[in-house]
Image (tube, rainbow, N blue to C red; front, side, top):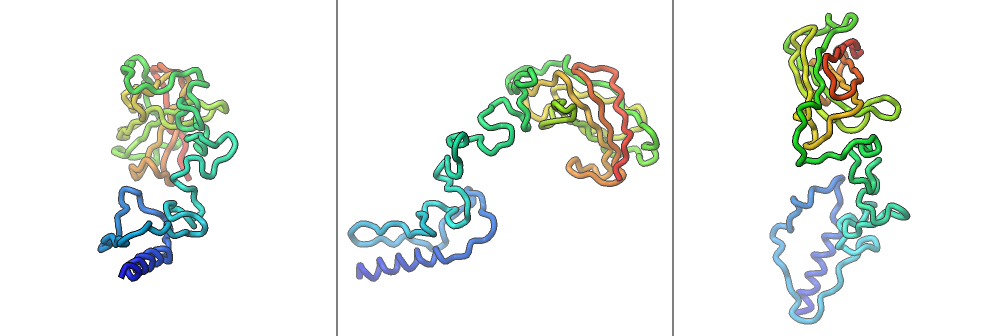
Length: 236
């Protein structure tokens, strides 16, 4: 009887190995034991070793999927990357001050401090105006998204947004104000050279762009007052 039960256990384990693997694994929080899978114990003697999948122990759920073993923090890494939990994160490897791929300390700025009090003097204020023939594409009541990013070495916006806001278009000369209260990450330092970008967005979806949207941007140094941000580029 003992040998019959043990053979049954190995048969069940073997069936699990032959199950097809679908693309994508669910989050570990959603993994569950198979329904109806009551444990079957061998009457005596040591348990057999775990079945092997392609030369890797079953304890690695990614075996056979050409993915690193989650139990090995250095799997797939070599050289300088070994032992670095930030390896593979563009611009952020080993650097706790990197935000959105840009090292803010290299720009002479302090890293975000969520406990730092908001400085009301660090603000950008002005008006959004129209340039060229952009006005003929715009109607009142449409969303306008504002985004502030740091200025990169090439003069272009870089990294994650420092501050954002959503306004409703009311016409040429619409006022705007951005402060540290509009920060994407609590404690973000809104200072130095930045680029303020605006987009008149027809579908009010900040993640999408489409022909007919109108954009514009201006470079300023915080704090900045009486900024003229011109919407002058119609997307085609």
